[in-house]
Image 1 (tube, rainbow, N blue to C red):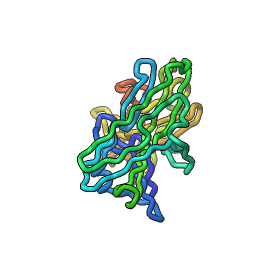
Image 2 (image 1 turned 30 degrees about the horizontal axis):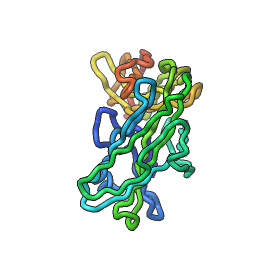
Image 3 (image 1 turned 135 degrees about the horizontal axis):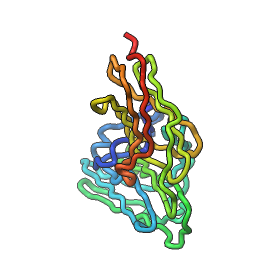
Image 4 (image 1 turned 30 degrees about the vertical axis):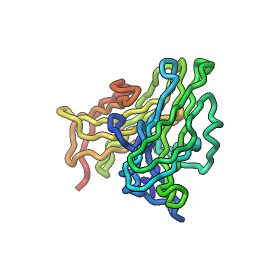
Length: 260
């Protein structure tokens, strides 16, 4: 399914008990809504830096069956539309650069939770940004049931400048969508949301916007209400650790609304 692995931060960072994405290995990959409701992983985004060398992730089993949890680092690639996709490449959780994770596995009975601790090497040099993806492999019946996974991004940032983003283009399409192209020009990888405003209010929003690759032009589309014909303003605003930061803004005039 195309939506299976959407952007890793698949909902607003302010929401709790949200899993990043789910995989089920049953011959073909499908989404399991009941599994998402029974097991929660929070937070769904980790940043390690000078002031936060240690972070914790809580996995809680609110279902009626026991589960086993194992951890691996998994490689993800970012497509031209900024969505993330699995490569199938994984490595032992003990093999991450500069990051120690304990414990590496757990078994949870109904109502139990496990706390996983991520520790950054105190000798990590300044001036780096490292992005990893930590996968929690979950078996609903302790090595006998369907296997699914939750993946969250883990960032190491030391001495990295704030993100710099430019809007390279914004236009209205006859399909009733606004198209916004952006380039991450310098600094840390930004994360936030795109908003489109008319003269009165916000008329469209697209959450969970990541721009990992510097210098790459990436285009996003947002549907707008029919009959839009006015000055529009688009903003790329930070969320999570970048909460409230205005990364980029542009105002332009569109000449006609969606075709009927």
